[in-house]
Amino acid sequence: MTFSKQIPLLLFLFFFPLRTASSDPKPCYTSSCRHGEMDGRINVRFPFWLFPKQPESCGQTGFNLLCTDHQETTIKLPNSGTFLVRDIDYRLQRIRLNDPKKCLAKRLLTFDASGSPFSPLHLLNYVFFSCPREEDVNHSLYKPIHCLGFAGDLNDQDLWLKWDSPNCSVCEAKANLRCGFINNTTLQVQCVSSVNSGLHNTSLQVLQIICFSLIGPVFALTFCVGLVMCSSQRVSSQIQHAMISGSVTPQPSDQVITRTGLDESTIESYKKVELGESRRLPTGSNDVVCSICLSEYATKETVRCLPECEHCFHTGCIDAWLKLHSSCPVCRSNPSPSREMCN
Image 1 (tube, rainbow, N blue to C red):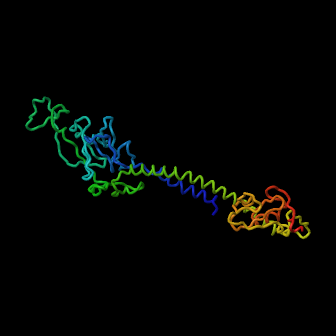
Image 2 (cartoon, one colour):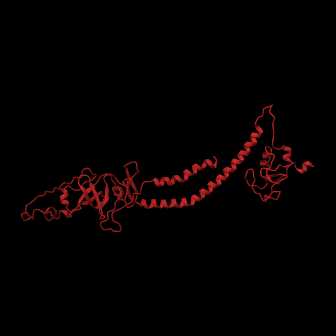
Image 3 (cartoon, one colour):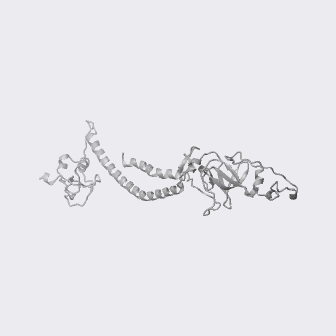
């Protein structure tokens, strides 16, 4: 496989990890509505997800929470409206709610948990009476409710709900484990490490940027060197193709063959020298590259020099050239037979 054919493969291998990393889902780290405060702070994690700080893929359907303008955490039940979230017990799978308007008793009159993944933790029966005058109420038997017109302590209590699915109690019972989806295509859950995936993802992105800044220039330099190598290989291939075409192409018997190159005896009369350790050409020239194949001269390689212009080349390169052309490939002068042969 030539370098030019390897370029698409190298590009794919280099950019594929970056593309994959950029297409990964957003990290599902623990979030909350309040920052820097512990009082009243609700840590939100699977199976809940907090809009808009976490993507929907971080939690189960029906477990979406929302932050208010006062940085309070709320949940909206389909048939009962919005409640304040006071606490979430992930190990026991319970959530504690209250009414934003501090009238839980009024909300219980029409409370309906159906349509949500939650159910009441404790089922208690309450009976509400409406009295025309407060003085008619027997306070030893009944507790007045302030938000319904009378004072009472029912609103100081909270509403506890529970959820049975997904069951993450086993994962939450261990300090270093949390619950999460197995992958993005299934609703099955498993225990995962509690390490902050958001921090891990950020570190990975920083590492990728550093690698890209280091590998990018190296890759560009390698690409340029490859282009030069491809050009050299192309020239050599063209010379070899010309040699083969000139030597094996059949000619019709009645066609007059006209050769523009030199015969072999003339070519052999030109000086041929084996290079030493210094690789210095016999003509004193400082050239280090053969002008035909564009390759550097090496120790113990044989070069041939033309008698008139004293330009030197690899023996194989110049011999193949002179069989097709009668002029120097550099200066285009026509070399004459060697003086030694003429004498």
